Length: 227
Image 1 (cartoon, rainbow, N blue to C red):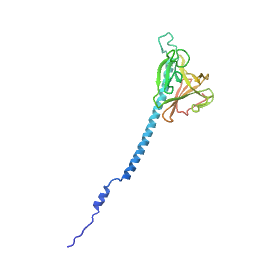
Image 2: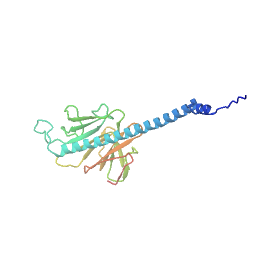
Image 3: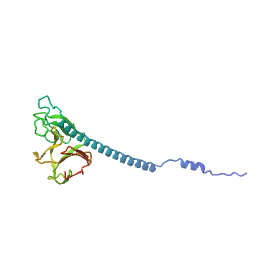
């Protein structure tokens, strides 16, 4: 009587197939997932930041429009006899503002000096506060000749200014501008002004206001063509 033994490979093959992933394979998969998650979160954060900055630019533009409506319509600032005749405007700058990069004011020009004055007369209509991480970077006044964007910070055609008032005097809906350079009245007549807003990183938006009262939202590279 002979006995034969037959080696079966089926069980060994099944065992090999059921072995699963090696440590190296798991580490590679984990690394890929980490990279993809990081890229997604970075892009999402950048998108959210850009969206919030654009929303901030529109909020500033709406504030300008609010000043225009107040200044060109019948709105009483106080109960005095002169309460209906004041100009209304927005003020951006260092004077009267502790943190000028995060605040600006809608004001009634009670004393007629074309800037926001907290004392001796409180001209505050509304104080606007910008959230952390976003700032009012600078302002530029564009003169009546030449083309100039608000990027160079040069004087002359595109003049960098340290305080800016955009105001409206009844019944004219056109915008008027008053600015200072190094603390003194600039004496320049601008055809348009820019307000430059900065978000986290190097993300910028501009709010442009012209003498005709037009308001535009753009990027920092937006140029003015011979206004």
